[in-house]
Image (spheres, rainbow, N blue to C red):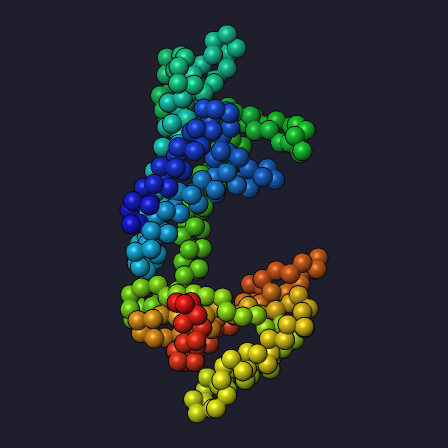
Length: 293
Ligand SMILES: [Zn+2]
């Protein structure tokens, strides 16, 4: 599964930049925001790794360091393929004295450039890095153009690293999203079950912990949740609870995320907050059953 999906998105990550280059002259992997953030390259790298890492999850294989290494190799294959494809499409328009991307026309390999020689793939790539002006613009107003070999190399290396980083970031975001059951060698299931308003958090967590630590209590989990859920108390800030469980070994846990208002008053996830608590599988069976029904 990971091989088929991996090859599929790898091919897409090569084909999309080249198709855009051919149709619109747009160089995806050299598209940057705020002058240097290589968003185009990061996106390409992310797409390149997506199928492979998603495929590992779908085939219940735990993502490990070795898989990131494979991802890195895939990103390099993607990068070299896009560069070679760009070279393959590069033609020299003699009338306008400029390079254009086309399947027909005079390929650049028919030409020689002073100081570089015959335009082979490595020489052409080096030539383009060192001689393509990098234009700085704000809201499509051109401010300045810099054409300098050292500058060209710096910008290019940032783009190349962006592509590799995008692929690895894809792996790590997929790794973070799914929890693995080491006992059963498969991914656990995940389900959002309720929200608790932030002001009720302390009371709720205290009672939840007491319940979890004391199996003989007569109170039901649902009662605690109903007590603290309080839909009227909607401040906009809340804890979101996910039930994570493995049906094979009957293990379950609650994972909470905290959503708070930021300085602009917008409710966003607080990344510093992490709270996970193991719960008895029988306590949460009702929530799992609802899923099946
Ligand atoms: Zn399990």
